[in-house]
Image (cartoon, rainbow, N blue to C red; front, side):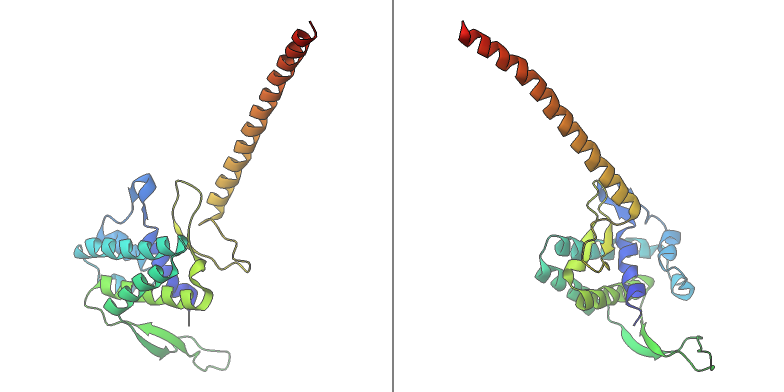
Amino acid sequence: MELAYYSDYAVRLVNSEEPARGKDALTSVEAVRDLFGGNSSAARRATDADVTRFRSVRARLRGVFEAADGGDETLAVDLLNSLLLEFPVSPQISGHDHRDDDGRPLWHMHLADHPSNATAGYAAIAAMGLAFHLTEYGVDRLGLCEAAPCRNAYLDTSTNRSRRYCSDRCATRANVAAYRARKRLEADRSDSTGLAAPNAQRASATGER
């Protein structure tokens, strides 16, 4: 199955809001439609009512990432299961319009949804994609960016489970901040050492008298 593709639905929705920065990109039906990417037929079903619905699903998906990031695997799974129950999908074998070199269909599993509205369709695919990723790679592969104030969600696909940031930009920013913090600490220690030496000399001289 196209695991990375489906799980990305969840990441895109969660990252449409940056709570710590007070930013929310999900403010219109056009923003909702943009989340569907190339799935134009599903995007066309979106209406103004879906803005509020999408925000509700987004909060629940963020809860899954927060639980996973906090090390509470059971809570993360329970929250995701509640979404799977509420927004079911039907797996189907599909070839779409893709053919191999011999003209034969490239069959693969596809998540077909039967939604009553755009939110239900998106939530179903996002939840199932995230569930595939979680069961395939582990709960600890769901994370939130450590480069404060960013708390964007990400899916760790590194071979050594070492990912900590949502993007190269945040990783660079965090590394620069850490470097500057080390330099400030070294400068403070140097200043303290410089002050301590004269004080020690004066104390020694006083003792000799």
